[in-house]
Amino acid sequence: MQITHFDFTLPDERKLYDDLNANFADHKVNVLLGPNGAGKTTLLDFISTVAPRPAQCFTGFPTFKRIAYQLQGVPFLPEATVYQTFKLVMAIENPKKRFAVDELPTELAALANTQFGKLSGGQKRLVIIETISHLNRDLYLFDEPESGLDPQMARQVVAKIHQLTKRGKKVIMTAHQFQNINSDDYQLHFLEKGKIRFTGTPTDFLKAQQTDDLVEAYIKQAKFVS
Ligand SMILES: Nc1ncnc2c1ncn2[C@@H]1O[C@H](COP(=O)(O)OP(=O)(O)OP(=O)(O)O)[C@@H](O)[C@H]1O
Image (cartoon, rainbow, N blue to C red; front, side):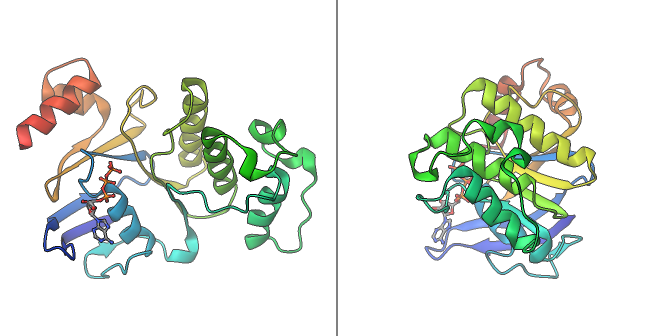
């Protein structure tokens, strides 16, 4: 999955992407990093085709029907229970299949009969990520999946996302935290000022910034660009 020579200017004439080039690994969890407002979510919008994706710049990406996209907002029905919500989303692909309550992902079992609107912010995020991960797609996009989750849940959710790559699925996520990016099964893409400034594994990133701490590497990378 590649993006080449991609330019995009916002309606207020700010140039968000300036000859942006990116190369996403098929068998790793691709993690888009970068400062607030760098354009990570907007890039996921283009990849997902929520925003029109110029074919000459985006190659090797699946069509929109083969992509699952976890947006930051949670657009599920507040009155539906977690079990009903799961069934509703699964029906997109399997309209005839009946899901028994015990087929819910284990992480959601305790919430099965709670209405979506009555869940906490973190629980809502957990439900949407768990549910989307059960759709059968080729590419999964997650926008800040750890945001609002407690450390244990965040680790669980990232582990779930990691498992998708083990099942041969392609994954791109955005992140602001590093606690769970703990192996070279992750490929970092640092977006700042219109371009991908660094691509590589966490080990590569630490080596490039001559540190053993990912947060420090991030700060050094950000300073280097500015
Ligand atoms: N439809 C739009 N119209 C105008 N400006 C937009 C639009 N979509 C995004 N932007 C602007 O594009 C910039 C990038 O936004 P984006 O949400 O992609 O950044 P981000 O890197 O995901 O930020 P964060 O880490 O804070 O979530 C922001 O300055 C935002 O205001």
